[in-house]
Amino acid sequence: MANNRVRCLIVTIITILLVILIIGAVIYLIRRNQHRIIFDESCPRPKEYSTDYDYDYTKALKDFQNTNSSTDYFRLSLSWSPAFCNGNRRAANSFQCQHNFNYIVHGLWPSAKRNINQTRSIRIHPRNCRNEQPMSIDTIRKYFCLMPSESLMQAEWEKHGTCYWNTPEDYFERINNIYSKISLPKNTHEILSNQTLTKRQRRQSIIQSFLDINPQLTSDNIEVTMIHKGKDLKEVAFCYDYSFNHTKCL
Image 1: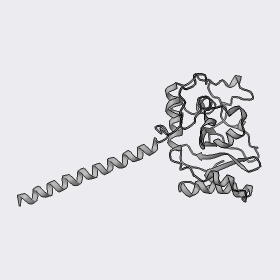
Image 2: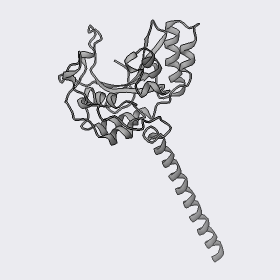
Image 3: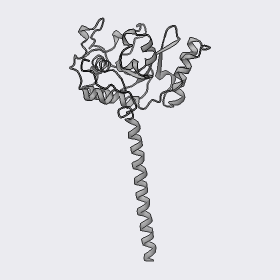
Image 4: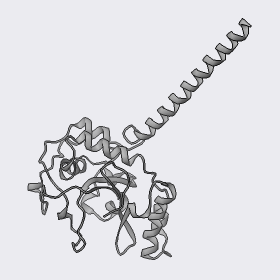
């Protein structure tokens, strides 16, 4: 009788330990997936990071400040790096364009809802709410794989991040959090090189490529911007509500 009780106790303890190990492994895998961007050492990195990346909208051509607009939703914009690099001579020597990046984060933008009769314009959205000092190189290094350009990181933080977040770390951690939950299609090059597709079909194929591998998305959560008469991809944007759940792009 005593032996049976001992056996039962041992089995119970082993079962509990196995359950704890399984739960721990699941938590570890989830956390590793959520932070895959930050700690992804496969991302190309410069031997030395730039120290000249400050941004001042008052010195930038055609930039402006808008601290009066409301934030009704958020847009996470992903840039298709090959198109940016092929169409921008000034960027040819940049670190981003000297390496084989595909989708990179352009920015996370607090955005205002457009009125029915209002034309599309970036001027309706919050912008350049504070003129900030350059962020630390540690922050640049930590989130570089999201946005492989020191100057772009600083500019996006000042142009958009300052209109909702208190610190660049808060801004980029939010970007990392939502970006890490989006699976990126591997067939974008194939879609763009398919000459049999019309402009509309090419755009729809890109949308569908995201929907196929992201069951949390619907087509009205995504906006695709094409360039060069619909032959190339500029950006893919995803829209979020205040809780950073996907919402309809307005």
